[in-house]
Length: 338
Image 1: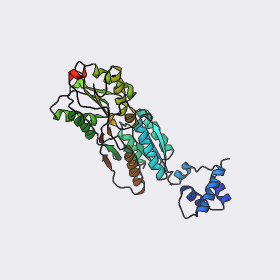
Image 2: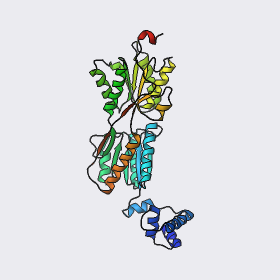
Image 3: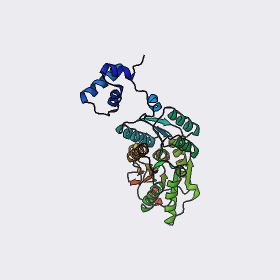
Image 4: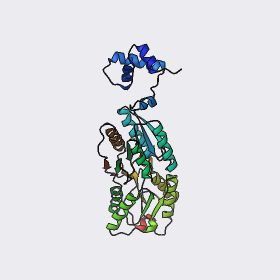
């Protein structure tokens, strides 16, 4: 039979409350006694019942995190940041990868409710605000990260996507580029808008054929296909703005497959600043998101609600342009073709 907290308490010669405090690092227990209790816990392989804690109205010290694709380096780094901050504050994090499918989102949220998590962080697309309202009605604190649903009254930690697009456009315009292509997933409308409106304000026209929008299935492959289409245009772009590092990686591969040198023949600006942007050849000029800070802030906002309540926060962080080797001054046509 599995060991219980009573077995640990009996062997240690203390109350069950003292055992609970020793495990959670709480209470006035001498270091020697705490170490003795934890040794007994390990020897008996005792595992506290989170469900039992929830049924008595106590916290389970677990959080749920929903991301669309854990293999995407951006969400991998977000998950790491959330988990690290959770661990610092005594919380475990259950990570769920939804593949951007509504039915998976609902299934995972039901699972997290069954496990009585203390709060849920949503970093995946949600089309139905009623789902969040249901959680709110059940007093489950919710926060969103890297996703914004204006109708949802929950904590949000997001990046200024419009400014990110603007920074990318200004950088390429300053380098003398005048023909642009934009490659984006469906949900990055603000990045695209920021880029396009900045180009238009400069007096340049961005033709509709210069924008490619794709789904979220295989972003490297989709980015490569979108770039290939743009590079086949008679007046092909001299610069591409890709709305994340994965699509930019696909675009870089597509350019090289056509014998184009980056950045001599075509410049590429990415978005996110994950490890992908650093290991590319050449390293990618990118719009950096402060992923570690985002993870820390979203956990802090959620736990503040658990402790103190209060108004919901919408925290908007600023992106930063990091110039690397994938962008350069636009060369005259005759020199590019030499």
